[in-house]
Image (cartoon, rainbow, N blue to C red; front, side, top):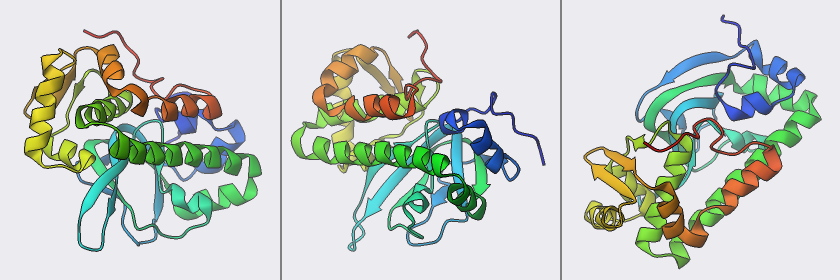
Length: 247
């Protein structure tokens, strides 16, 4: 089994763990590829592993009893899947799967649970992370209830940009429709709006960020609070890994 060096892992949560906390997990870590559509958390099924993403984008989706579904949040290199277990819950009705292929570090669920039980400081750390994910979900609800479609689209694109490397985002119209809970035709119209103000450039299967600051201006009050809270309670900016000048 390969040795994992905390200074070189590319997941922010693992970087921020105490040396002792990292050591509790490192002996059982396994680096894995995460292909498109790979399921990280299945609905109502006990998770076997926690996955700390290093690259790619995970999508948290909630579904209704009549099979309607909408995305409620993202996971990237700033986070991890399977965090319902931190709240002493065995399963969750939500589903998490890879919307953009990447890679991550898997830790067996029993190893993770044992580490939390043995290390109260570590458990408190992950509870703070769970707090930031709950806030992300809350602001998704706020955006859906109080903001216009182009504002919500700008927010979701910014959230993807926070978690994916570079300014070309390999996200499809189908994915954006799931994020916004609308038809693909509606997404196309709203992308044209953002292109018209030269905030993005959209082609099939790709959205290129042209002007991030303009996207932030368009998103207005529906973007920023969860991102600032992440930095406040965990100590690093959510985008710490990928901040780079726009080309």
